[in-house]
Length: 341
Image 1 (cartoon, helix red, strand yellow):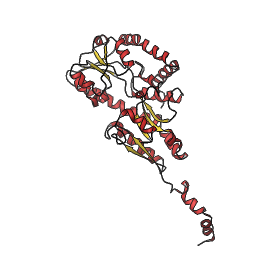
Image 2 (cartoon, helix red, strand yellow; image 1 turned 135 degrees about the vertical axis):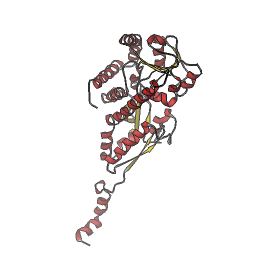
Image 3 (cartoon, one colour; image 1 turned 180 degrees about the horizontal axis):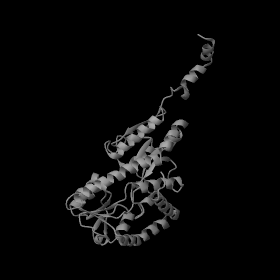
């Protein structure tokens, strides 16, 4: 045994060196990522791809393990609680299910602003970067996003805006009720995206407000024969992470996570969502007897006019409403003009 080796062993320095992160023997930090989505959906596949990228980039510092299919909790309404209570470290969920905690994220649900998932996701994250979103004190967003906005999927022909007059549509929130009323439709409560298709098939509803991608999952696309492309708001979605867990990560591990959260994950999401939305839309219009109708510029102007009081009321109800709506419109427009992610 050399004198140097013996000295290191006697002082404990050798043990410290072998146990230090720089020795390459430090154990990876294991993080649990939960989603209620089935493991084979495009969204779950996308999350698994992102997890693999982060794990590889961390070079052993992180081991994010994926729990799809509701393995840690099936109810979409409790995903945030799973993170807050330590059942999981990370989860995909919906800020719109807890609007009292995330009142500002609800700005994305306003009508006729967001046209697709790319616009909604980019603008949603930019609102966070601007420091305009309340409620994120105990959780860290790894992604803020929206799906494609809802449109009208109907069992009746909806050729234009006037076609909505008197038709019964599912209204799952107060703002949806206000929008349908402003457009001349009859809002009906008691139904949601999971049971609206059955109600449409039984004649209890004439249409639902939903995107093509979720309509393919919840079967509205199987009973609807006509669509009116009028973007009436996009629900805010998020990937939540427990803040204490995030802040307790080793610096190097947290740096890797920071490099991959936000816009990089959001772009992956938006690419998947808009691609599937386009594919399902094409399948719908390809079915004999189905129709997809676009608003004329005149009809869009009319829709904007009759829904503007709803936007104004939302602004008045939020202490930072003017800044939120202005920033949302500004960032959507910036992306349309070629802003980089």
